[in-house]
Length: 209
Ligand SMILES: C[S@@+](CC[C@H](N)C(=O)[O-])C[C@H]1O[C@@H](n2cnc3c(N)ncnc32)[C@H](O)[C@@H]1O
Image (cartoon, rainbow, N blue to C red; front, side, top):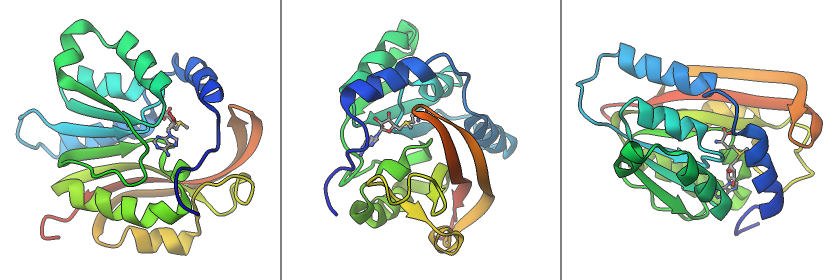
């Protein structure tokens, strides 16, 4: 398969953004930022890419903490929602790009954050995107986000990307693994109850790679 994974219509995504806009910043982002801050890197302005930013809550948290952010999403409505939510004084630190993640050339970044978005990448485009993320990260920079596991309920039903545990271990080779946490649970999705299988990742690009 090539091209974009059309798993939800623009109207469904817009409804998803209304559903998620009130949530707090995700635990994975807070944990990643605490980790980076804990590492005591120089207090310079750092650049993050929020890939598939959705309603923009995590982009807002990054901006609040002084990051420059390139926020990328395939949906125009996501950019509309985010731009409405950004305090005017933070606007100079934000660049918003509406574009599919497939085939994107990502610029240099200290953090690439992709919260529940990479699974929506068209499977045929994923290897190039994953390589692109590694290339774009500065040595010592971090990736944080999720990949879906092959036991996820949507596997085989939606044109999305899923991985076995062995495949995930192979994908993280070349990184220092700060977190690789597998979750299998009955939970809730926007559409209703769902069997979830996903991996939370925090990875550091090796300084020598
Ligand atoms: C499940 S939402 C996650 C949003 C947000 N990161 C969060 O954690 O709440 C996935 C986001 O990825 C975006 N997306 C899905 N497929 C995409 C694609 N092929 N290219 C770019 N963005 C895409 C959607 O528009 C949506 O905003």
